[in-house]
Image (cartoon, rainbow, N blue to C red; front, side, top):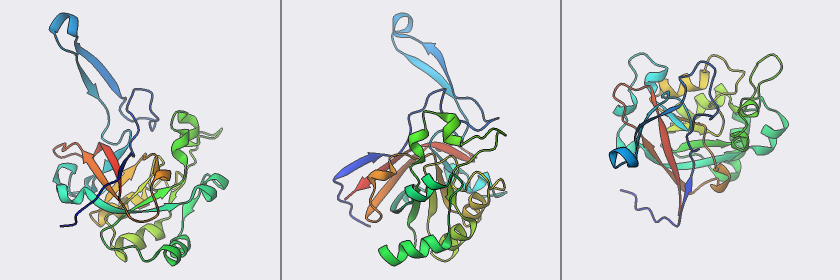
Length: 234
């Protein structure tokens, strides 16, 4: 068992409230008053939201029939070493930026081969638009979204050749918005991996050396779960 010495913890999840950015047609985020201190002696709300809302974890069941559900992901697979590919500049230049296999090879040339079992996170800087949903999704005048992510070839290489644990991004999807087939999510799910979307504060993580702890709700049969994701710095 790896002994972790943690010097700092980074919050990688966005706060949840009814006005968070949402894909059109997704279940709304709702908080429903149930009791209050004045009448019941304690404060309690019910809440309702989609399994793929806010910062969240996609389980293989979300894209593969019969794939494991979020409650079937064992605890030891939720504490992972992480590498972060910082791509703020190309993403700022091109809202449809997709991290290519060539980009990945350049990153490995500088930082070393990505180890098996690592979680790979793409930092595009997109989380700075979180409080402006229109900009976060990059909707244009034709209601077509634009945001960056992983290229399919790059994702397939990471999942099948590097055998990483999964991929994550600080955008609404691990694939760019123009990829309407969810090809990267499907690639991850087919390899029984994990996908994290809508992350934040990735700028605070170094390219190598950090870990992440994924706190998910063990929703029985769930396709995914809102998640509390913490970055752990040595």
